[in-house]
Image (tube, rainbow, N blue to C red):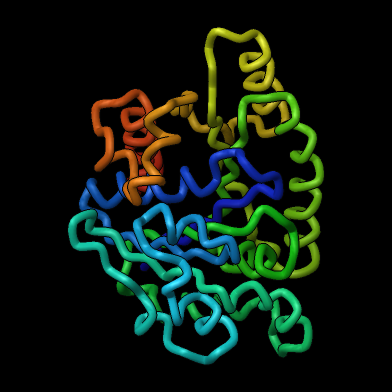
Length: 258
């Protein structure tokens, strides 16, 4: 039975896709069967894994709205031992098309339910917005939401709105929805502001902030241009070690007790 985590933050540039890709890559290095699902029309997760997003003919759009089996749409990277359900250009119209669809909030969950036995982890990369695609991502998050938060002041401004959205979805649509954890990203220990943000996030989400903190890193910023996760691009870098630590922390927490 797969664990399904949705990575979400309506603010762009906080390391959401970077976290989805690199957490997935390190979970795979720990011998987990990992699928990354790109439901962002910008297709950044798809590009970060070396796939030309303009060349993707079928992907998450067809799984959501085309009635196509998601297994037939998955791309496998044997070098990374990582699977991807890519985004395609057609996903750009999905927000509008979903409005008139039946079960519009749970279409992604229904599609992913068919993959439960094929993967250990399914990570969903949502768009930086709170529209129907993100709602589908939240409704599919059977094991919780992972929120990347950039260690800068402006990143805090959207936390209240995001928390409110999660609570509304929980109250109206999905009572089991919960926050799995918060990942602090782009941390610069040299600044007082970064440390203030860490304290504020811990106040917002007591006991839910992962111990593994992702530092600001040139290597992490460079890796997507090579179509590689940090585990393959610069495995000895501080960013690589941080994401490996995050994967290890999540695996330890997810390990069955007893």
